[in-house]
Amino acid sequence: MNNVECGNLDQVAAGDDAISVHDFSEKILEQVIHFHIMKMKGGFFLWVGASPHLSNLAVAMSSKYDSMPLSTLVLGDPSDTAPNSLAQRLAKKTKKQVFVSYNLPGTEANLTLLVENRIKKEMELFPDKF
Image (tube, rainbow, N blue to C red; front, side, top):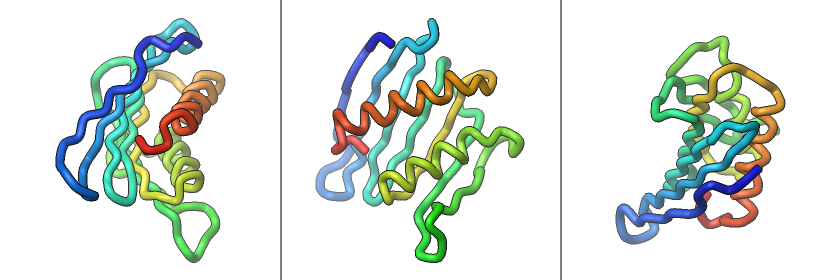
C-alpha cells in the first residue's frame, strides 16, 4: 500500500461544536481508494470510495443494553452489509456515533479488510480527526 495523499484538516465552525474535515487516499490492490472524514461532536461521518458517489449510508452507536453497537442502514441496498458492519466495528472501537458510506464495487473480502486496516492506521496516526 502506498500513501497517495495524507491529511487535510479544515475547520468549518469555531468552538467545541466545530465540524472538522480530514481526507486521505491510498492505493490498495492497484486501486486508489479515497477516504473522507467529517468529525462532529460525539461522532463522525466516514465516506470510502473510488469515485465520487454516495450509494449507501449506515449509522451505528453504542447501547447500554448490548455490547455490540446498534446499527441500521439509512440509505442503500439492504443486502449490502459492508457499511453496517464497518459502522458497527468503528462505533465499538471509538465509543462514538458513526455514519459510514462504503462505496467500493464488489465485496472482495481482502479489499474490505485492507480498507478497514487503513482506516485503523489513520485512527492511530491522527486520533484527533475521528
